[in-house]
Amino acid sequence: MKSAERKKEAVTIMIQGTASHVGKSAIATALCRIFARSGYRVAPFKSWNMALNSYRLADGGEIGCAQGEQAEAAGIEATPDMNPLLLKPGASGKTQLFVRGRFYGYLGSTHQSEEEYLAFCLQIIEESLARLRQKYEIIVLEGAGSPAEINLKERDVANMKAAELASAPVILVSDLSRGGAMAAAVGTVMLLPATERRRVAGFIMNKFSGDDSFLLSALKTVEKKTTIPVLGVVPYLQGINLLEEDEVFADLDLGSFSGGQPVAAEQKGAGRFDALADAVEKALDMPALYSLMGLPQGGRI
Amino acid sequence: MSALLMIQGTSAAAGKTIISTALCRLLAEKGYRTAPFCVFSSGEMLELPGGGKISRSQFMQAEAAGVTPVPEMNPILLKAVSDTTYEVIHNNKNLGEMTQKEFRSFLATAFTDIYASLAVLSQKYDVVIIEGVGTPVELHKPELAVANMRLAGEFNIPVLLATDIDRGGMFAYVTGTLALLRPQERQLVKGVVVNRFRGFKDRLQGGLKMLEEIIQIPVIGVLPYLNDLSLLPPVSAEKRLFFYKLLSQILRENLDLKFIWELIQQ
Image (cartoon, rainbow over all chains, first blue to last red; front, side, top):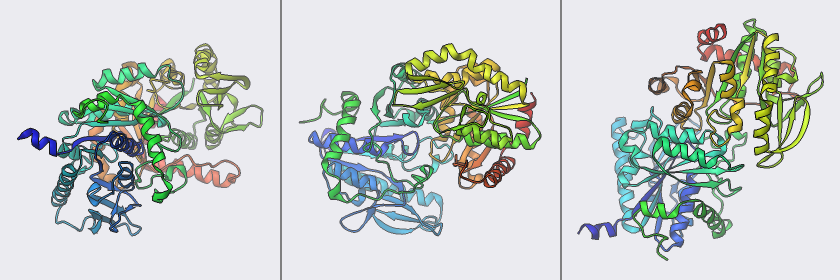
């Protein structure tokens, strides 16, 4: 009975980050592609997303840009369940809440209390996730921001709460290009409560460039401090792992606000996803990843 | 010997340059003869009137402090040639291209020389505001130590840790940075400055209290979104001065100044 149930429900893995713009979306996109081309039916999932732009679904609904792209990388059609909660800040200072692709109301006015709102969010997340898990074999979840915002912990339905609902092992992505990557990995784990810390199954160090003479010993220090393995170092991929979740104010510090205009479908050939997937697959300890997901080594095909 | 104060960051672009600039102005307004210093800089360089070059950052900081920029403020200048190669200028002498590896061994030998530049400034000014490079815990880039904790340790310099809250993960960056420092290095970190905060400060207070309890180091200020704006010529001198005054005013309103005066007077 139990094994029959397990067979029906998708296996899960979650990508969280030590900050915004560390490359969570790109890594999740790569994983969707890697699993899909190994013959799995894969779907992306991000419980909660705040962004100015969105991905337009075939039915007119809106979800996060990254989940739309990830669905394409997985070779499936994007659905509202893949990003059931989307917040869009408006010019008026009011934030629009989209539930499963549709405008639901303005943030702060949809429920009587914060508690009710959070309970509502969790219920929506659970239902959407359950539907996806029935339909697919692997769900690649993506978190938002950092799971260690100790001042927002109660309200964070995008990271560890989603991981728990999905029973997902968590891979934490840290950004080497920005500096402080080792500190961010160690610090994030230190700030998590023990139950959440146990979910963190590995680190990915993203956007590496330069001289690697001391990289290995640096990673060893991180592993020793946290007792969590580094599953890979992904090189800085010009133009491909820069694909970022489209969060608010994404590019302000670069002086240009390009937002995250979704590129028209015909412009992004499968080739781009494959180049990203190739680089990430090469960089990661894939046997370790498959093993922590309880899947046979090397995928299916 | 002058008072020394150092700004290090929990990431690159955490706001070290702009906070150092603001401190230079603040201290100058308080009547201290103040000079900036940074062991090495990459990026845009400016020709000095008296000959030699200096990075844009230290030039701006000197201008904010109202002092003449001199090469000692920035003994090593780097021009990135590739991912792993720099052109290195040391005390106005072009040493040619070095790989990261060669640069590391150069720093090991140039160490005394580099610090002599700081000693020169230290004799001429009341306060030297020292800007670190990158973060003090780039374990895979040991060459940065000379510009961060090795310098701080050598002269027993109090360190303020600047952190960028805008990108998220600030609590983790601060906690992790301190966790990766050696005990004697950690002991030099006297305060945390949160930069680029937008939102309601009241809502952040609880989180900051929790952070202070974890790290046992005070958060001495939360600054609004300050970025390293390009405010050198062609921007007019008048506008630049306005900007420096504004920066100083922002510190007055958002930083525990008593804490800063005490650090300076120690």
